[in-house]
Image (tube, rainbow, N blue to C red; front, top):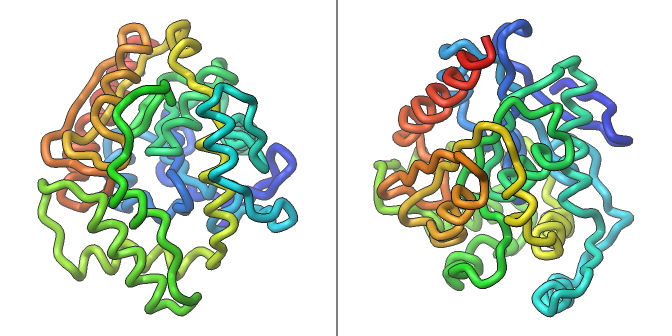
Length: 300
């Protein structure tokens, strides 16, 4: 996997499609490397006329890890944030947004459609806010503005999502990951056991086993200030894509995101949870591809 130096770290990435085509930057979520983006989605968007860039966030995949930053106290950070204090994670989401903007710089991409999923959606929002010259549009997928008081995640879904495997063995990692995806999945879109195992196994085989790194991602999420007021001032095309059965970031968060961004388009997908299934990729390709092509048409 190629890597570039950007924002002071090494970032592993993959570029698909023609370099001259409009770019879509894909930013994944908590402890998930670039392999979490299905090839079918990337290939489908390339077929719609886009260059796709997917990459590993810091502390995941083959980008730079930060073991020297240790294991954060998530509980203490949550307490401080809920009390309105200034929580101090090992690194903030703003730094991860700067990584994404730096990657675009390193690849010579002046502007891109910034698409992020879950934590990646939070980072994408911050790319649009902190680096507006880099964002042709924003696509926020199963994500949130972080506004306080919205419906919380289902406890059982979060327990499964944050479960640590019994060991670093592939079998234990696979079993834990499969259980987590089952817990956060919606009732719609068929998926076989073989498809699920292949999907999570791909990322397990690609990325090192490092639970403290996942905790540092979570620390960045819980310590991030709410973004809804800043998003009120955003002036760019935005698409919000959310599942009707998301147990991790419930639909109210997607609705709030769309309401916070002037003119944003909201698409609630019936039966979709907080996971990615091959059967839902045609829906995503249509939603994202049609939206981005409309934005490109207005710029022509």
